[in-house]
Amino acid sequence: MTNFWNSGGGGPPSGAAGGELGGTYPDPTVDNSTNIPSSGEKTWLTNALAGSVAFPATEVLSTNPNALTDYERGTWTPTVRFSGLSSGVTYGAGRAGRYTKIGQLVVANAEIPLTSKGTSSGAVGLGGLPFTNSTMQVAASVYADVLTHSGFVMSVVESGLALADMRSLSVLGVQTQLTNTDVSSGTYFAWSASYQIST
Image 1 (tube, rainbow, N blue to C red):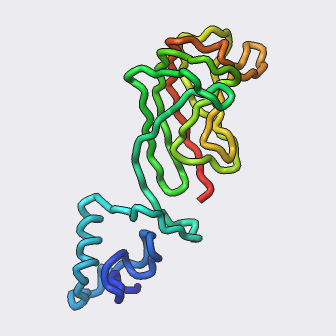
Image 2 (image 1 turned 120 degrees about the vertical axis):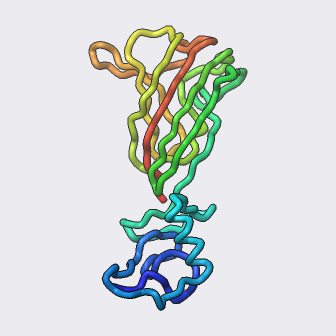
Image 3 (image 1 turned 90 degrees about the horizontal axis):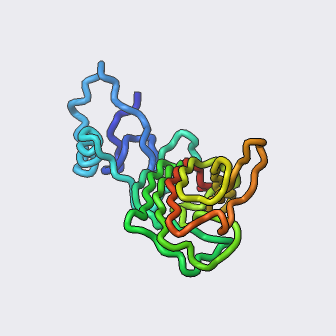
């Protein structure tokens, strides 16, 4: 088995490309005492053994389907839109969005308390998602309170957009778009989705 320490000094085990974790590790039955790691390699290994591996701020892309090239946590600002507009919409103090990105997978959550739905009209959408969705529509989970409609509330992350639609499903299975007439000043949404980005 190829030695754990690469000859370049610093970074992951040999065989792992830039930004990837992987490569080859030492055979425990072989004496590797003469293979002294560089200071950079010591730092990488120490962090890994301590349970903390930092990825670069800018993702290093890889064509290897088994490579994990990014991990990121952060916040985002959810917005309620009506046909893409949000004139006069105001929010309560609990408005928040958080996300975790693992490679191409994004897990996003949001709480959106409205204090005023404003004056815009049209289809209800959730904007400001932290990353643009890939080419596939994805079903999201949503809880809604203080809506003036009957039916089950649904949400779909639209393909190729950083936007989710809000929809209603009747007891007969008929799906319709929520509109501004279904929303009140005081409506509350709790929303969650897992979706993939293209790169």
